[in-house]
Image 1: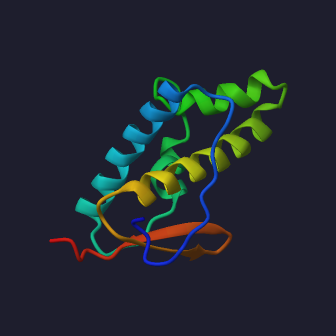
Image 2: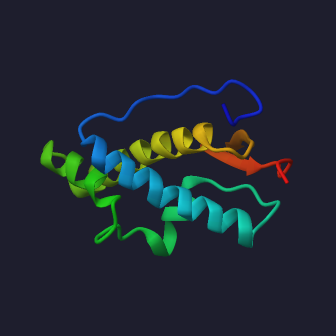
Length: 119
């Protein structure tokens, strides 16, 4: 496991294995960009895919939002629940990564920090 301490992992249901794989690959790229360009700074999923990146259309992340819309949720609830699903998928990406991360909290959200000891 690529966390310095044990961290709970959960599975995301309701999307295909292919969709999960595409999301995980997409997010690993976002994480590696963060680590390269903002070394030493912790990040949360909202730093990677929130703010100006909240429009997930045309990305693999759209499958998460669509899952919740198809379940009958309104747009706001679907966005919130898709973000939670994305958080669990990102946590799995980090747990499986060759790099080591420290998991923590930034207010109410999970945050992560690459400790940079692999090189």
